[in-house]
Length: 126
Image 1 (tube, helix red, strand yellow):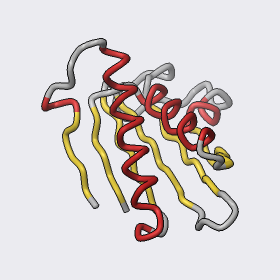
Image 2 (cartoon, rainbow, N blue to C red):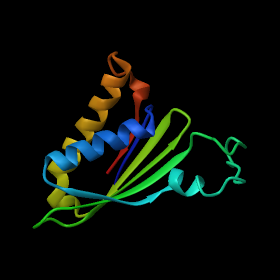
Image 3 (cartoon, helix red, strand yellow):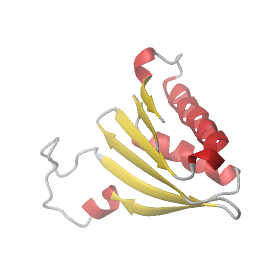
Image 4 (cartoon, rainbow, N blue to C red):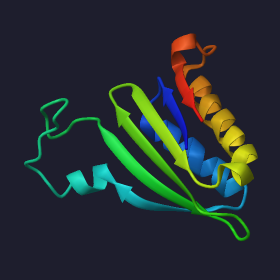
């Protein structure tokens, strides 16, 4: 599993991941979207913010491409932080993971318009 902790909004990270995978011929499907679930639960209160209209998000994407193993991507956002977990056959997908990392960090950079600071990319696990 690859894990990144970023100082970035989760919807920007998700958009960058979807764009890159689609551009490389991957079919990306959303398996779970917390925001969609919460729209149907009007009385729900966020444990972190105590509000029904909190900014927390959690999305699970599955990506597949003929001849490649399926990868799963979990994108969790709270406040101005996003955690991305990518699982799959790491040996075959190392180049893909590096490309995703560059695309996600590029999205963070283009969103801020400023050079990346050390705290933008808090953690990378492999």
